[in-house]
Image (cartoon, rainbow, N blue to C red; front, top):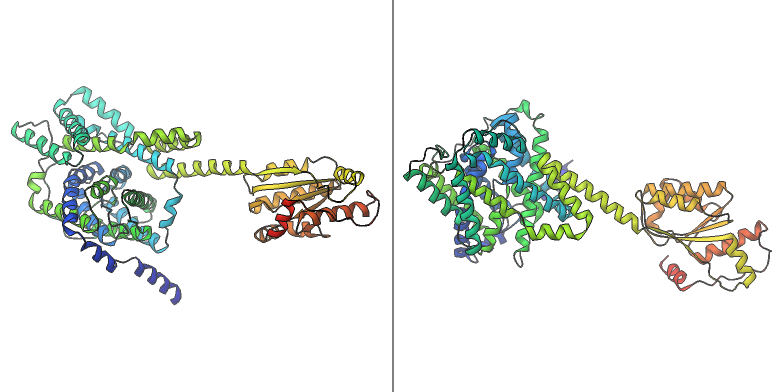
Length: 578
């Protein structure tokens, strides 16, 4: 028990901040400060918008950006990652808010943070590499669609209709708009989105999102446009940390949503960190430490009324493009947002909700990488199917189920592709030193098969059919040195085939069984069956000699002086490796 606790302690200690983090901060602080300021300007409207979209309000988005952004920067595993509220997390939170309320969301965030710390201690970060690219692309496309649809009510200037399915809510919002159109809100949303999209093409380094929001706010105030509903009052500062939202009796009920939030936080954060690594030279994130940092951030954010956070791909990309090289940039982003919370809350409260909807609409559009989607769709039919299924599941179900479905389908298609590589080939017997007549007799009564590739559950039953349908011969030789992998199903199928051939009076000899196959064959009783009466040989030439001896013993071949069987070059190679 003490040893196990000591190991856990050592793992946690390895995830804590290090001295080289401070050394990297000192390298180019001026550049990092400028990058952090730029990211904060981009992050402000996003934090406000995602907070509003989640259902907890703009103040929750700001609290998350400040608290989670700072802690994830300090404890995370990437020097360039920027964390905060994200569209993907908002998609998951909306139904949780509808079912469990604000306190339920805060509890879920706290539980998810604890789970992320546990995943980090278990070193689960490395498994991110097993998520296929089509799943990630389909997931991203689905999220972009959901984020865009979530903005429809605010962009149309109508109250958000009841419901937790985004397609249903969007349709009801359109019906409400048709009854009483609010063209002012529509104009603000379209104008802000257009400024962001068109401006980014010409001047990608200019933060058009904040400029468009400032302009929309100024127009709404100067023209006294009551139709442009503002965010509303914001607290001038962060609330005092509190656990008053926590209801221990509800933890069991909230376990499933917490698992979903933790899974999404892990997936999106590690994906974002990988994207940051790919945009730079020499940067490499620590996946386990990144999970730990996100866990700490999500434990702390609910104490201040914040929603669950993840690594944010868009903000991280801005951070990298503006020259960030250390954690100081992400820390600066959080500090600037904190100053805005304390000093400019009255001004921020006047931003029209429709303007924030325009920001998120533009963000959703920019999330869609048309070139990547086109390349993925053209790669293979399997990749296109996985992408479409993941995207549709994201829209129709939820993000976690979408990833699960994508992974299951990708795994099934991959197994099918691997199973197709497995072959059972009949190989001719080597002529060796036999006479023509004797070789003809041997070839008449002995057949040799070579198993190539994996012998596992996805391909094993095909082998059973092929083996048991062998013509009337006296001996079957199985050359097993080229089996790349074998599972219990493959071993059982092999055992069944041997038993069925035995009932037909056919002797089965095996050659080239590898040490890695011995345990699997032994576990299902196939090894004893193959080794009984010397039926397992180290090489194919020895198996042929054994087959000849059997035919002589049973009277099929005349007894005579044993003739050596010459090995082919392939057999010699097998003997050397076996």
